[in-house]
Length: 415
Image (cartoon, rainbow, N blue to C red; front, side):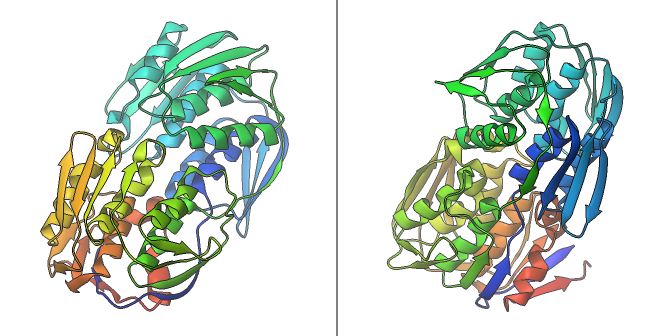
């Protein structure tokens, strides 16, 4: 699907998708618990549906009632198979969970999922006696974990740690996880909060996590608005849009809530956590180690604020759905932006407008596609975003929501 995006101002209110980071964790914790776990306002993106398939593979029953999903845990089997789609969270959480349950498991994926970094996790599981065969589109696992000490290099992904914490909570005894070079620490905090809601109170001392084990309990959860998606609208506000969001908690534990303070440093004024406006746009510097998902849209902002902006510690973005550093450099350069990639980041020299007037590809990456929609607001000529359907991975209604905000968004027929 190709989308033509013009520079018509976005104006109005939007009901954000709820946090898939929160939903992933509670779905799997619910599947590993006895009884019914209810998630109100659960997002229905492709990634979340991947975790629901994983829950069913774990023996849970899944039922929808409007936007509430009930996950009823049972007795997990000792073997199974399921498809992760392109959900890195589902894959990296389920690998240690399946290993903790023991038996034989086949996990499928699509796109670049099985080529994305997993080495630190597979090496650790193998060292604990789990046999792993990694193929291009699937992996096979066989074996089981025991309570004990687990040391992992978490520089590639905090999801390794989150998966281990969930898995070890199921074992019949206490364990300890030592996370070295932990990146994206706020995402681990979301996991700790989810596990606590399910009865597993894990102590963290300087990235050494003490896991009590002995299982999880059911819970009732109201999933909050997703700051990862809010970032696109908040950044658009900085560039002249007037969008107000419903469903955000300003005191959220989500790491991407940092978008509020980042935009304030770039000259924005926060209106109660639901909108921004720009008092005086200015350049910014960002260490993205804890907020990698914000980089695509902040690359757009960096091309449109005065001065030179820099994003560092973002090398992990080369192993996402696409190489996001290369993707944003290529697309924004073609739109007329001044941007250069470094080994672990981006350097942008701002200007008032971009030229636009061309077709650019979304690189099969939902965050790239949505960032390009924001860039279109400041392009002199409309742009065509090729492969725009990739937003369904996390925000299926994105283009419809933009239409409701008055955006110039039209479906283009491919020639």
